[in-house]
Length: 134
Image 1 (cartoon, rainbow, N blue to C red):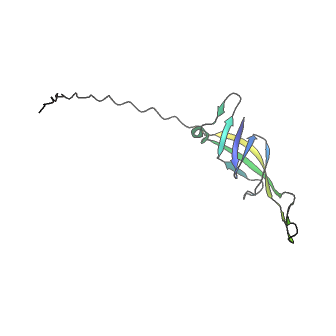
Image 2 (spheres, rainbow, N blue to C red; image 1 turned 60 degrees about the vertical axis):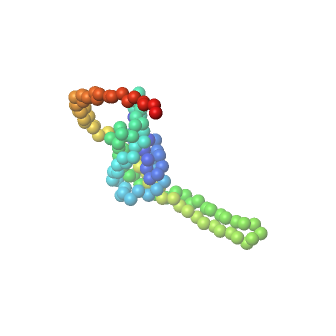
Image 3 (cartoon, rainbow, N blue to C red; image 1 turned 90 degrees about the horizontal axis):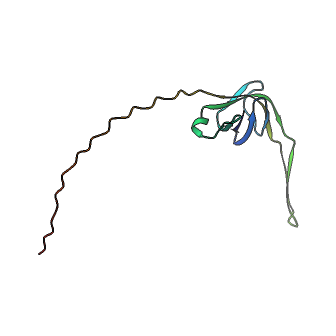
């Protein structure tokens, strides 16, 4: 069984036991679990679920393994013959997650409402209008 889940604006394909490196720092301490309820799709052996109403019942729980930072990315801007140069660097925060489960809350089906008795229609008598020529 796998699911496609949205985590901080990006979609990841996850299954139980997978380790996912998320491109943002999640404000949860390492070792604690977190639930993601924004599931986009779920697929089992022969059953695929894409309906939003059915997907509301699913959630993905993950354990935060560690927080780290990516290697430095250097951004250089230069315009030749103008004396313009800019050098900036950036290190992206990362969070390593281990997917623990993809679970669904069983929703009890509501009983179908009883159909009301059909309303009886009353036929109105119509009168014919005759044209009178002048």
